[in-house]
Image: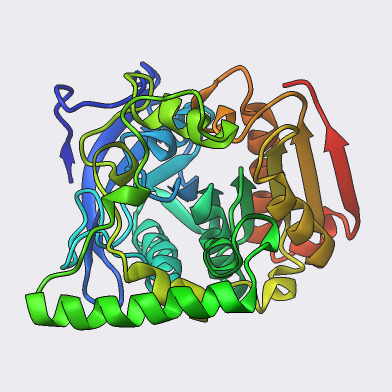
Length: 343
């Protein structure tokens, strides 16, 4: 690990109470993941730790790094990382998504955190943002080393890819898409390289005819507010055939097995993605909590410090990781709660 040079572009300012180190670690597929480890300058050791990633198509210099910076300021060791095949992480070809590998990426981050001498490996949690909220829940279900999980603006990428927003895609439409992707595989095999579907990328400029959520994404990823050259959503496109595994391998089959470890789901009141968190809340076992942020839209929880409930996240992890280290996670309260807050 080496102290990162400050000349690198980040979409937020590093706290003067925090240090940031560039790190690398491997997942069990041999892919080298690139991350930034944020540490409090005056934290009592050993530290509770958090693995953080997302949104889907973003990089660690964007939202996940902002979260890690804030949580380190509050006393946690926080690792923001680029998922496999994206950002500064390895993996060829580039810009590939996988429900299995992206779930594994979180467990690899837990591997790394648990080997740090200044981290209590019995006090490790996960925060997943947007599409990596679903992968965070999936990782927590299978990886019992994770003592608590929180998501913000959560997406289930397998559900939205296979069924569309609000599950409106018909079997006929799904079949047609799969037929087209099958044909694309032959083209990719013939060309020796994947096709990157830029037609599905965010527009550089808005026409005013876009759906509200597309305009919100564009306002984050394509403007100085959140732009980063390595971010797929800012400056690239996913390989078209990435959709195949997302359409065929649903995550969250074992959602209930997160219990008795605590789960916190945070969503904006006006977010187009709100239903994902609400449905997970209904399906999950206790203890669980759903927090709806009044007037907030999906991307508000990417970077708006006056909207993201960092105090709540701090309280949640302080309580649940403390209990988890004593193997008393269930004592956090076998009850489900739903709250609406201002900040």
